[in-house]
Length: 330
Image 1 (cartoon, rainbow, N blue to C red):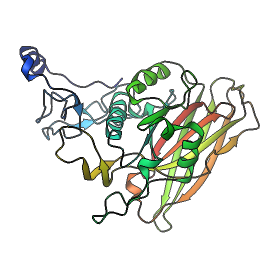
Image 2: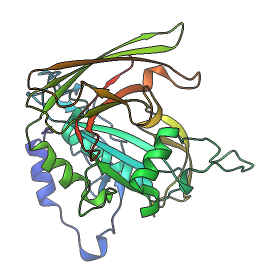
Image 3: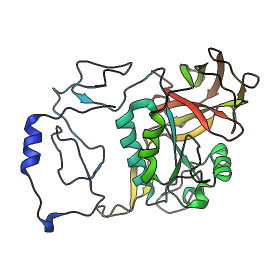
């Protein structure tokens, strides 16, 4: 698990502080929650990504078990990369007029900072809250929906349950696929505590002239996979999309945010809604299957903010057994 440096100065300082009853704030309260940041806010209950650090504090992966561990890093950048371990697909079903959806996005961000890329994130905009509007100021006019997202929403019933909610490895709990964001952390931790049955490694190449991304994915069975057939789905997501979002955070003066930063936005699928079959059925331990695909990026998508997301799943019950994602441009 990714750890953060906590100095004795801050620990002793925080222990000395106390709040009277009249100072207690009702959550959520957004701000910088990292004690070593210059603008640390002791009252913040949710990190909003605003932390500012002394330039002398080098940022990078601080987890020595990660493939990209940097022993010089002092501040963790939430981008640790892990290999040959179980990873969990977390799908955030959302919409730009869903005022409670930013709370789910914050939980997903926290999971990424806790687990690095052992959490594979994807934001799927669906249903009523993702409908476009024809407002004079141009608000909520972007269509974030996708054909695959629409079909997944129908299959798993996310918008029918009321957004926000999500899928964790597409595993149902008590017969229900959509899960409240309040239980994501516990479900992710439980799944990551179990050994992987397969691994995925991904190599992406990008041609700027044609705006085409080519991905080559090797899927290696660690154990016998006897519940076949299995399919692999490959998607494209985009980070740092600046657009409108409704936000019911009571600390905000206006619930309509014109410059909200949308992360992990599902843009398209390389191989359709349900993907392609891997192998001929069951997959024996040690078998390596390769999937190579290409996709042309839309002119409005920023290739520097795009990621390829892939996951292999059982076709009988839709359960994801492994997932991976890497940037289009490393």
